Structure formats: structure tokens, C-alpha cells
Length: 376
Image (cartoon, rainbow, N blue to C red; front, side, top):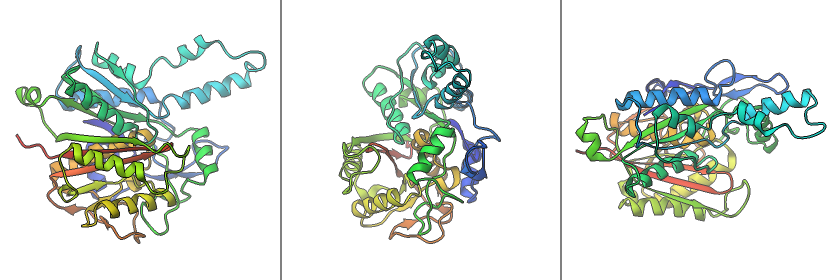
């Protein structure tokens, strides 16, 4: 695995998360917009290609592999892709009056935006295999990993680099979420009675998927096993979830059925937990209904912020580390729970054999993925 969050690299993020730290800070990267709690990697918004480059090299190093990897599949996605650079170009051309007569030459866009995360990852890996970039709003990260699993199971690839990269801190993104009333003002408190809203954040999380026999043969470090997943869409509204959460419930049920698991088998749920009023209440109701026996739950967005498309991939990484280290991460920022859930307020030392990671995106995109501790 490899990547970064507002807490640092994946190993650093995990250590700080278990200590209950948060990478969110009140920042004002754009003078025309008010300061907000943000999860930034530096003092200024990060460029997508730079973060993708870092995440790919970290993942290859952790996997113990050296390019070229000609037969490696690539499923590296982003919900917002190069939007930050597009906004900068549009602003620049507007100031120059380029929009007054005709739209700028498309070649100018191509020259300024040479890579998507997937094509850059393929170039860094030296891959000649399939390069895919499924986009499912905030469910993008899990959707990418799920597609990578499919490529291996169908025999198209033996190895796949999968995950998501997101640099969503742009003027348009901030203004859009602010207009919707979804942004936090002081901090991010998932499932708390006083939750204010989400905190936008930059992040990248990639996993290197591999057939078990190949990983064993080269004595690779194995974090865990992907059992199966469930992907559904509400088909209900452009942003609001379906009131009865029927699509979300179906995604979790499909995931468990395909993984040959029952609800009591799940030792930990990494919730989407955006800290918005509507999302947290709907997700809490879903978990209460599907897991009436109770299950430890946490959202890590109070520590990392909401990295939109990358959030699910980051959640998968945290689930794998929870199973490897036998520690369940806390719901940082939670002070008074608004729901009857077993919410983890402090790091809990506990054996974890099966975990479930959830993501729910705008447009009713629902994703669930089941992971298990690796047993040779």
C-alpha cells in the first residue's frame, strides 16, 4: 500500500490516527473565500500529478517491485481529477480575454493537463495492461479497487495497482459545498450531536492487488484479502440519498452474500461518516438495521478530512492496518454520540478478522467492500 493524507504518509497517518490526532486546520488557501477546516498536505493546495507520482512510488516500494511491470493492470481514479488546474486555466484565460471571441484551442488544455492519475500511474509502472478510471463520486476509491479485483478474477491481469487520488481543494469545490451548506465551520465531528459538516481534504491511497500464489512465491508482505464487494446506485436524486437507503442496504447485503459472510462475522465497520447531518443519520440507521447485534464503528474523517473520491481507498487501507495490528481506529472529533452505535472514541485493542468499508457518494453511489485478515 502507499499514499498520503493530511496526517502524513500511510504509516504516519495510521500512527497518528491511533493517537487520536487530526490533520485538519483552519486555513484560507484562496483570499476571496473564508477560512475553513481543511486537510491539506502543505501550505498550498497540492497538484494532482505530484500526489499521484508520490503515491505510486510509495506503493511500488512497499510492494517490493521495480518497474517495468508490463502486465500490471492500472485502476487509479479520481472523482474531481484535474479540476484545480482547469480552474486555474479558465481564470487565466478569462483575465486575458480569451473567452470573449471563442473557446480556447483544445490543444492548450491538452498541453496543460497531460495526465490523468491512471495514465501517469501506468507510465510510472511501465505498464502495457489495461488502464481504467471508474468514477463514482465519493465511492470512487472502493469502485476502483473492486474493478481491480475483477481484472484479476477474470484472468485479464495477475497484478493490479488500484485506488484513488484526490486534490479537491479548489475555489469551485469549496464554493459549491458551501452553497449546499455542507461545509464545517470549525471542525469535523462524525456522528456527533454537534456535527457541523464535512471538511475537504487531499489524499491518495493505492493498494497493490496480486494473486495469492504470486505474492506467496515472491514472499511479499500481505496485508489482507479482498473477499468481495457490493456496488449499487439509488437512481433517486442528484445529491440527496434515497430516503429508505434501499440502494445502500442492497450494496452491503450483496457484499456480505458474495463474501459468504453474515453480519455477526464483521468485527469492524469503517463508516463513510462525513459529519453532515443527513449522511450520518442515514448511515447510522442503516448500520443499526443491518447489524442489530452491534459492531464496532468509526469514521476516520475527523482525523483526515473528507478526501471525496480517495476516501474509500483510504478507508480500505485503514481496515487492512486494523486487521494487521489488531487495533481499531477511533472516531476522532466525536464527543457526544447522536446515535445508538458502538462508536469507537479511543483506539481499541481488539482482534479483527473481517472488516467492512463503506462509501456513499452524490447521485446515490453506494459501495461496500469486505476484507479479511490474511491466513496462509
